[in-house]
Amino acid sequence: MTNTDHGADGVTKVAELMSEAGLCMFTTVGRDGHLISRPMALQEAEFDGDLWFFAAHDSRKVRDIAANPTVNVSFQSGEGWVSLSGTAAVVENDTKAEELWNTRAVAWFEKNPDSREVALIHVAAEGAEYWSTPGSKVSNLLAYAKAKITNERPDLGEHEVVELELPHTSTD
Image 1 (cartoon, rainbow, N blue to C red):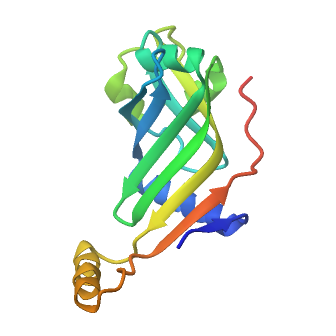
Image 2: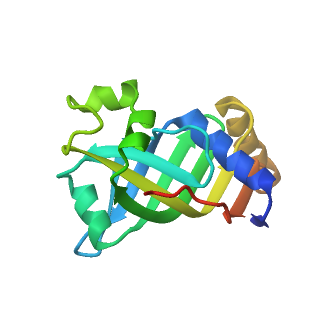
């Protein structure tokens, strides 16, 4: 059963699941209309409606965002999954880039965050959906086995659609 959450509890759950994951699949719409996903490292753990990423300025994802800013960012952690939709923009904000620069970014880029080779991507979240599966993989397998025996659907936790009406950070 899917519920729609309009409150802070849904936002809190989305933030919790995303911070546990850290890595995500970042999906853009290619110039030919096909969806293209690639792994990315989230640069800011505290979710306030904005997500931040670093990318190579000459990368395909940067070109895709310029042509069509609609993106999806999906996360998977031991506790569940999040699918977040939003609008992306490549921004020039040296202060924000310096604030976010960390060991994850250093692992991918030889240059500093103020280099023209490094792009800062901002995603303004518009909506999210999560599936929360508390418990271990073993307990989830037991839920599937029980469902098979009882001919009932397995209880694998919560599923919520979260409407995100959050104030977004200025990208200036």
